Picture 1 (cartoon, rainbow, N blue to C red):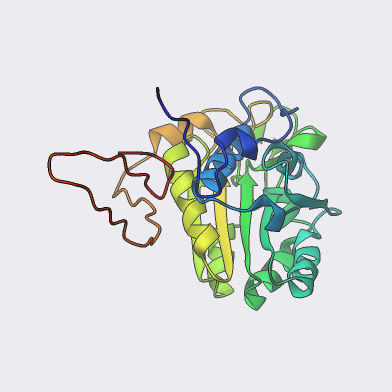
Picture 2: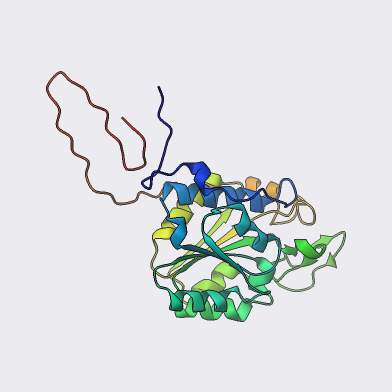
Length: 263
């Protein structure tokens, strides 16, 4: 009889589920939520010590879709960084996972984002970046492509802000960029971020299938897949104690590994 895979806490992947998503079918945010859930399971995060933080927007709805046994707080627009700073000052035992959008972080919350990174607040800061305000009919955000045209917003006349570059300028010690269509890479980045001491910023290009998925947009599925160049694959390997077993010659014994699997 096969064994159901559990993590170090004895939990199943399904134990990290949240509520069903209410976002548009095909939204890149849903894929990111799935990978957060899977990475948290693989990393054996104790949900009772996890606090999910968010601001306002499509991205900020997503913490409801994973880790339903954890704590959560939905702040006002652009104010997730300052509230998270207060949370972490009040309770150092918590692990904070913030989910924000390009508008929530790059526009109204830009100054708060910069100061949070400068202070090196211990948290995983995930930006679900689609270049538009999907919740309010597709207006351009600060990360939208210069000169881009869309049906509803017209032409973007402003240069884009690079949120990874801004994090680096503020001396962030963990900065990464990924694409919602690359589930394996996102999981590895998340697990590395969970282990990082300090602010870990992950900017994930996450296509808005309703307002910004045209082939010429750098925030589209087409662009992400066509411009994916694999330089190397670096997975996350968590340090663990050696597993040693004694058994008689000619005998065999099942051994449970740290990830819950058996050999």
